[in-house]
Length: 353
Image (cartoon, rainbow, N blue to C red):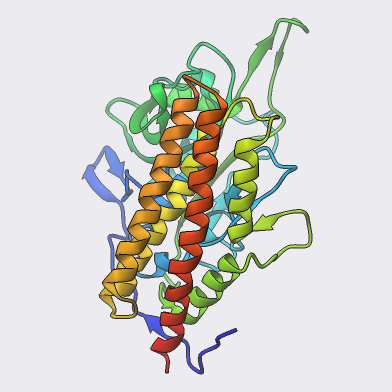
């Protein structure tokens, strides 16, 4: 294991840290509307806020894991929790009420507007039955995440981002009253013939911690990359990490139990490769690795996109040929990725010598 005598820190960049005021009746906060991660909305949200923190961001989103017992079997390994709260990169403030009973509409609206006014993003789980522009709107009750990053008093609407109709990741307005109904999440049960509410409100605000030093520690990046390549288990459970997580993905593809291939998983690995490609481009700009390594990894990224397209194709024609093609391509990806990123690991170690 390589450990440098002195971690190499790359300085943070400066970005807009206060709300952008359109007029006295409206606020829109900074948000990257096309984040590198497209798979899971909560990761989209945090990256939409933090993606601008270059080069610090290149030290994040490296490792992944497979959990056979989870609903989302393939996911990012994030030791700092949601929005990087544990490391101090963000501050989080939760809605003070846990229970829905006794909470007024004005309290929910005031909480949201007051935080947006002060540069906080508001995120939570809501019932999309009440959210316009979604597939579930007035059709079915579906609990899902949402991010608010602005509001317009003139139209009495919050500005949100998330997956809308047709699975498009877009900004869209949500009238105040619709948002309140979605947060409270009341619905009528035909079986029990009564109105049912969710047990608690899941609403909180987060923002970038102005006192946090957003610097890239190259030594920590090396360690994370090494853990990924060697599939180091960082938890005491059944999870499989790093390259071994990708092997589990290969097993998932050809398993007879999976007649349907979930495109979220293929998109997830495509996200990981895309972020890695941007990370390598940064390392090349700092003369830490060569352009040849960037170019070699570009072929890995291309192969991963082919796997994703095969997953999409399987929705129209699921057969063993499609699954076998995706499996074979993933085996090639794993072999090439280990070779290229192994050279990147050596280059980082040599950079300190």
